[in-house]
Image 1 (spheres, rainbow, N blue to C red):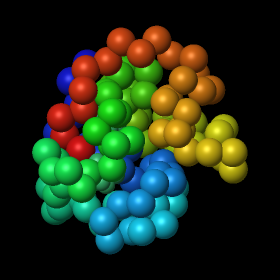
Image 2 (cartoon, rainbow, N blue to C red):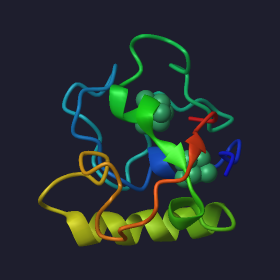
Image 3 (cartoon, protein in one colour):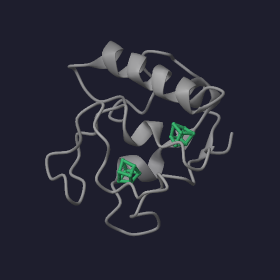
Image 4 (spheres, rainbow, N blue to C red):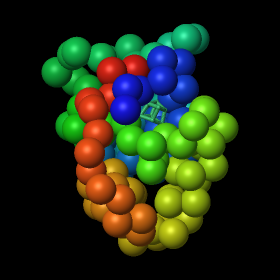
Length: 109
Ligand code: SF4
Ligand code: SF4
C-alpha cells in the first residue's frame, strides 16, 4: 500500500533506538519525532541524515490499518508487545504480527 501523507503514526507511536538528528539517543514510544514538520512529513526525507530504519520502513495494511487512528493503535500495540526488548523497527516489523512484508516504500515519513 501507499503511505498516507500526513499520517506519521510510525514517527510518533513507536520507539526508535538509533540516533535521529536532534534526538541523539533515539526516540521513545509515544513521542513525536523532532524531524516531523507541521504537515506531519519528515524533514529529512531524501537526505542522508535520515535514519536507515526510517528509510527501510514500508507501509502495509497490517501496520498502517485503514486510517491514521488505526495505524496509531496498531503500532502502539506492537510497541507494547515488543517492549522492552527492542523497537519494532529493530525487528523489521516481523514481530509480533508475522505479517507478510508485501509493502511499498513509505513515501511520507
Ligand atoms: S508508513 Fe503507515 S504508519 Fe507510517 S506514516 Fe505511512 S501510513 Fe502512517
Ligand atoms: S521518518 Fe523522519 S520524522 Fe519519522 S521517525 Fe524517521 S526521522 Fe523522524
